[in-house]
Length: 130
Image 1 (cartoon, rainbow, N blue to C red):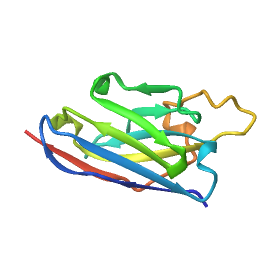
Image 2 (image 1 turned 180 degrees about the horizontal axis):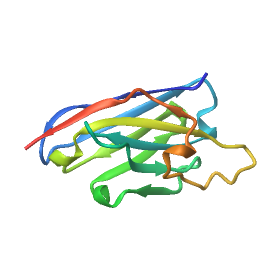
Image 3 (image 1 turned 30 degrees about the horizontal axis):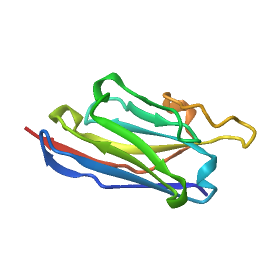
Image 4 (image 1 turned 60 degrees about the vertical axis):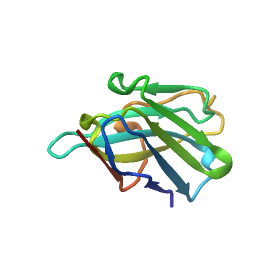
């Protein structure tokens, strides 16, 4: 059973930084393409960022480009989201998403649709005060 677990959320003032982590157990981490999504109260889930299985390709929603950085450490079975210059509109529950990819896949694809992912964490709350 694949189980992503997020950590690193919290309360921060506007302009501050947080680093979210997503640890995954259950299968070989290097087989996963991964992503971050967020959901604010009363809003639909929103795509934030994605990273390919080989870590070479990343993608971001326009609103976080230049402020957020997605990365992964396969040796630690962990994905990260470094969030800088946070804004009140970044306030949301952030969830980690995992997609199993076949070994024969090139490993260079990332996925921006929530329907592409097989496994989800429960989320970590990020609150940015103005």
